[in-house]
Amino acid sequence: MQIKSAEFVMSNSEVAKCPKNRLPEYAFIGRSNVGKSSLINMLMQRKNLAKTSGRPGKTQLINHFIVNQNWYLVDLPGYGYARVSKSSKKTFQKFITNYFEKRQQLVLAFVLIDCRHEPQPIDLEFMQWLGENQIPFAMIFTKADKLKPNALERNIEDYKTKMLETWEEIPPYFATSSSKGTGRDEVLQYIDAIN
Ligand code: GDP
Image 1 (tube, rainbow, N blue to C red):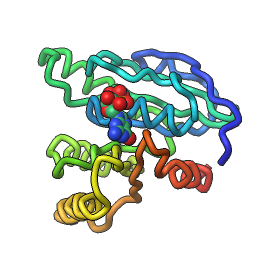
Image 2: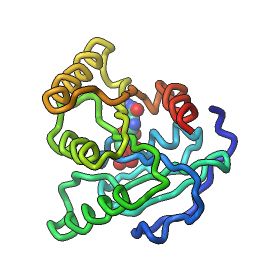
Image 3: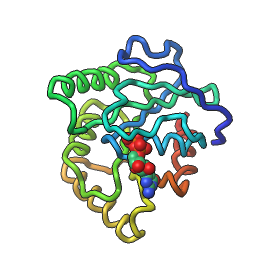
Image 4: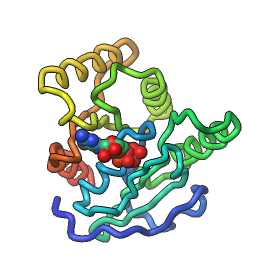
């Protein structure tokens, strides 16, 4: 897929206020600092479409971007940040679960995972929840340039092994590097193929 246009549409905290038309949408979500903004900018080939954040947990809204006038890229808040209170964590969970449960236009979620870490409970639990709620998702292992190919392979294998404890099959997955552009064609082709 060629990206001919990518524009910010709106930010909000309520599913009911998201765009009303029926264009398909693809959501991006992951722990704060996983490299989500960098990945979105890399995919869209724009420097500042999604803001890269120095302060984890700052962007707590649903952000819609329209791509090629025919699909939405949705930038969801990062989860798992340590610096927020319990009550705002609860509010956050509610609003994210609402989005996933209610948003009929959602085609697929990309769950971003920092490739350097061993399988993290918070990511595994989140994917488990998506699975239980029958929300299709794919995994994106970010910051692939930070590991040697063997180490990257090993970490992805660890994830697969961990997931196969509870899943019958592994969801589609990609490895990306926003600094090198790795994985861009694969992710965009994947979206294109479903769209
Ligand atoms: P977000 O909080 O998930 O939106 O993460 P950001 O996109 O703001 O990235 C967090 C940090 O990781 C920043 O310092 C980025 O420069 C860095 N980063 C993000 N993606 C990559 C990548 O693919 N490779 C490398 N080496 N660093 C990355």
